[in-house]
Amino acid sequence: MILDMFKLTGKIAAVTGANTGLGQGMAVAMAEAGAKVALVGRSAMDETMRMIDAAGGESFPIKADLSDPSVTAGVIDAAVAHFGGLDILVNNAGIIRREDSINFTEKDWDDVMNTNIKSVFFLCQAAAKVFIKQGRGGKIINIASLLSFQGGIRVPSYTSSKHAVLGLTRLLACEWAKYNINVNGIAPGYMVTNNTEALRNDTERYNAILDRIPAGRWGTPRDMAGAAVFLASPASDYMHGFTIAMDGGWLAR
Ligand code: NAD
Image (cartoon, rainbow, N blue to C red; front, side, top):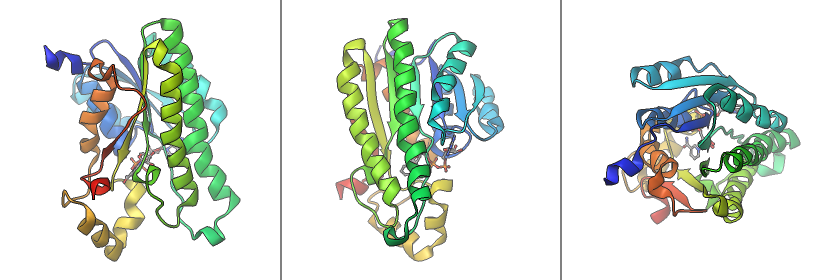
């Protein structure tokens, strides 16, 4: 039956940045769909663990600061050691720094690039090694952005990193499709999370953005749930290298 294709029963997922925001929304959705979920990040995962417990799921926290790409192999090893394997990786952890490009510092460049793209690549690599060894395929979901498609302003390292996420998603899809590994992405629009707090506190910017969203509202972590489960499930087995926009119609405008 078609709905069975969306089930994640018996699957093992790792979601980075799962303590809050979009990562929390996707981790809970995957648990609701039947996956066991490793919650990876630098902050306590208590709230997400409680939400997964309440949904009747199983989770395991893995402490890691992904601004240091050298920790990535250890993160994947820890998930495999706890759950006995890995089927799904969601690269969601990300940061943003806002400053006029003319004054942008090397630190704000490196911090964002290390977390948003360098660690993402090495997490993909470590997960793919496990997927290939297991011989049962795998799913990688990279969280991109509207700024994978547009320029934005005052976020030069963020825009560069998210354009890179889009390109990397395509490249890895091409290399690893032969192993039945699907590498795809989701580009969230303007979502209500910590990432957009500064924007939402600026009433003029908030309203200007709202006016341009065809759906007439900002998105929420729950808006990511359907696409995340789809891309993690057998329903997307023939989808390789594509990034879905979950943006209330922003890019269509
Ligand atoms: P958020 O700030 O609420 O969450 C970011 C997550 O990443 C947090 O869990 C945080 O702990 C984690 N993280 C950051 N740096 C880390 C590090 N060094 N090590 C480990 N974990 C780290 O923001 P969010 O909106 O939920 O962002 C999630 C993803 O969605 C990010 O990649 C972001 O760029 C992307 N995104 C968000 C929006 C939006 O409007 N909110 C739009 C487009 C893309």
